[in-house]
Structures are given as structure tokens and as C-alpha cells.
Amino acid sequence: MFFLKELPTRQMLESMNDRIPGMNVDVVENALITMRQASLLLRELEGYFTAQNFSQLRFLILMVIFREETPLLVGEITDHIDVSKPVMTRTLVALESDGHIRFKKHQKDGRAKLVRLTPKGEEKLLNSLPGYYALIEKFMKEWKIGHG
Image (cartoon, rainbow, N blue to C red; front, side, top):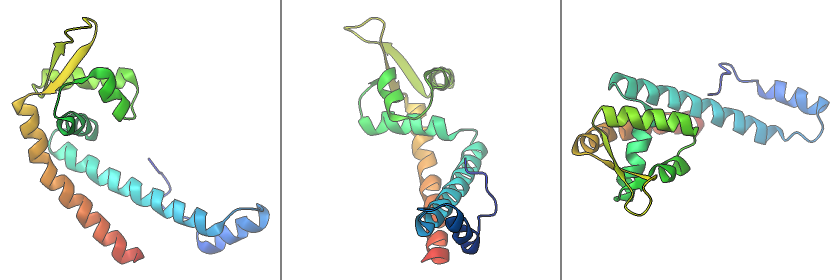
């Protein structure tokens, strides 16, 4: 999460450039704007999912499983999402408890678990997508108007 509410002005960045040789003011300014906008979008998305009694992480896990169209190993899901293994494990257990996913032992490796969506999980994901995409589209249109 990016925490700066007020970004440095162009003048401030140019002043920093005088004191820090080699700083590219345009690049830094664009990066700060992008990070701030991404932070705002993530905050809006988190609010959207919270209102649905859900979370971005749960949504992303269901999306990864859904898009692959076959059961995935827990490690394969973890490879696609940037969270620690303990956080992933807790979230998968919660998704199973809510009836959104089901674990199945791998036929060749008894220690490995395959994860698949349940009909309830697929319904939850598909019901979340229209609002998710609408929020992103609205956000990007407003950002383009402000920076177009």
C-alpha cells in the first residue's frame, strides 16, 4: 500500500534533483503518480470485496483456479499469488470452510492436495466479476480524464 496522500510537487522533485544527481524527475514523478493511483484502486477494490463479505485474496485465489479450468496443486496457486505460504494456507482453509473450494488428495503424491472450485465458489466468483470490472473501468476512465 502506498501511503503518501500528498505527492511532492514537480518543483519539489526538481529541487531534489539538484541535491541528488542522476535522479530523473519525469520518471520519479510518473512512478509516484502510478503508485498513488494503484493504492487508491486497491483501496476501492478492498471496499468492494468487504461489502460482499469477501476479500481480494479470496477473489484472486478463486480466479486463478477458475482460469486454469482444472484442479491445481496448492503450490501452483501459491506460485500465482504474492502472499506467504501461511497466509495462503489459512485462506484456502477458510475458502474450504465457506464451501468455495474443495481439497482432493493427489493420486500419485499422497502428500499433495489438489484444489478445485465448488459450484458455490464459481457462483461467488462469477457474481463478483461484473462489479469488479465495472469498478476498474470507472477508475481507469476517471484517471485517464485526469491524466489524459
